[in-house]
Image (tube, rainbow over all chains, first blue to last red; front, side, top):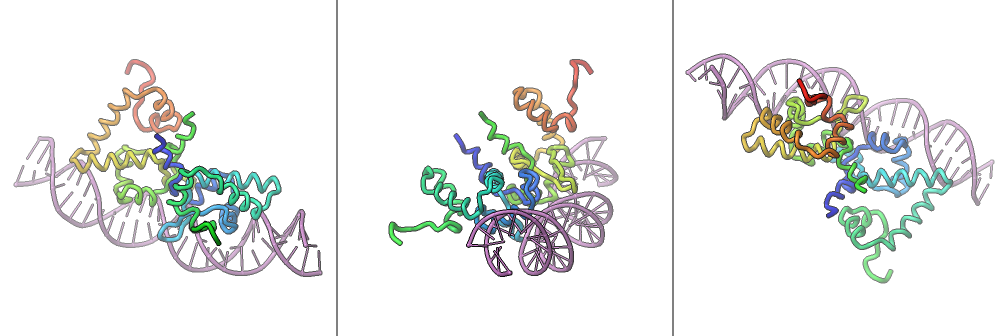
Length: 111
Length: 111
DNA sequence: CCAATCATGTTAGAAATTCTTACATTGATT
DNA sequence: AATCAATGTAAGAATTTCTAACATGATTGG
């Protein structure tokens, strides 16, 4: 089964490689993080680590921006898309802390 | 199709991350390269880049060494294993230059 | 037994990569 | 005109990686 697919989600790629894979500048990559569109992990020393999934997401983001969509709007899209995500994908992201820490996940039905 | 599986073979991981993923020391990782058991690519600046496949191979190598098998012997095993490899895997490795440059591949049936 | 080889550690200094912060720019939007 | 958005660039520090060399405790082949 898809146990191989963990390659896609493991954060192992440094920013220089991401730059090569995406064609984006480091400035852009860090800026999209600042705008809360992407959430790399860090080495103990503080260096960013990305996954292949992140790389793909970055390309999508860059495309939308090229189409004139603002980061603010992209973020809203992402939050919207999240609500109707399949439970497995959801569970994975929760485990990897990609949601909990960065998007506002409500714990109960209220508030 | 398995176009997703290219994640496994793309050389995007720096040695520090490989160290974390495998538990090996940098010394060990570089030594196994010196003994021609593994073939990272390089950044323009000369830094090593590994794939997930490399990471897995490194763990296998380390296990064999722990079992008392010498690098010399491990290399022979690998060369042996190569001869009966499926053509697709073969093609991929050729393309990625993991064989041609490092193992002696005969072009014709003789010599 | 002995010299050589194996596998690994360690050190040192240089080079490459990444980090944060700050200021600059251009084009929209208000 | 003032603000915001997206990106570039620069500076200096910090982190990571590199190569080369020397050290060491097995192991091993003769």
